[in-house]
Image (tube, rainbow, N blue to C red; front, side, top):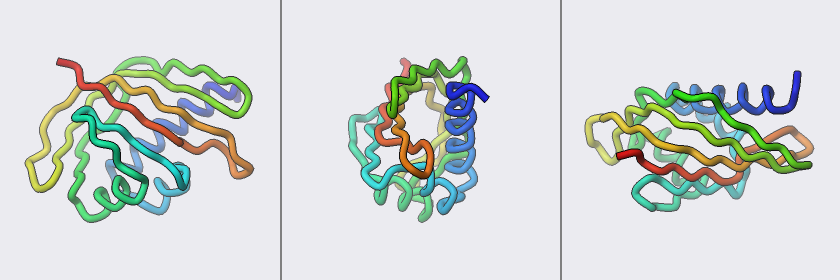
Length: 124
């Protein structure tokens, strides 16, 4: 399988794990030093992000690409870019719709690809 297709599949799998709150599986895909910058500009560490999903403080009902996932691979680094449709609730708020652009940076490790940085920008 071409590397770009493998990364597209991994990203779709990662999103499915976040919605299903499958934290051990999601943990394996996220690098120890993972950071996400949310559409509101907050930076969350891996512990904050996955911990929030585990406790329900961050609740995804939907999180899926709605465009093709563009992939650029250069050695041990890969960048993925796509638009998504999300239904998310944070801090007890009822989940609502959000459409966003994503720019995700993966790096190759001895165990395979892991996401290191994720940036989401809300579409208005």
